[in-house]
Length: 127
Image (tube, rainbow, N blue to C red; front, side):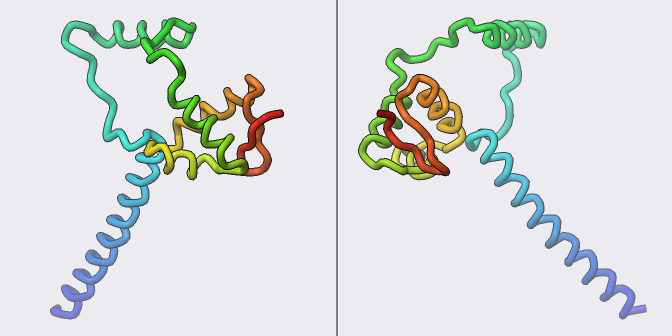
């Protein structure tokens, strides 16, 4: 009977160890996708769920979101690309002190504008 209990406890401990590793991997993947945000915020008491949905629908149609003028981060990224041709997005993010997921949207937009071009993983000034 004692060996059954010991074997069962060992199996449980092994499974718990595997699950802890999986939780860490899933949390890391979630953080990479959300830029480190923990969880989505709940709607305020003044706006119900329909208000939240309506505002996100307006954003998708192109309504302004109250951004700061000047595309500061885009300009910072562009200056880093000009200063170090061939720089990668993770390197740019590290230099700027931000998560790289933001830059995966910004740099393709800069490329569409003709400011930068991509070659493999590196980004280069256009022209």
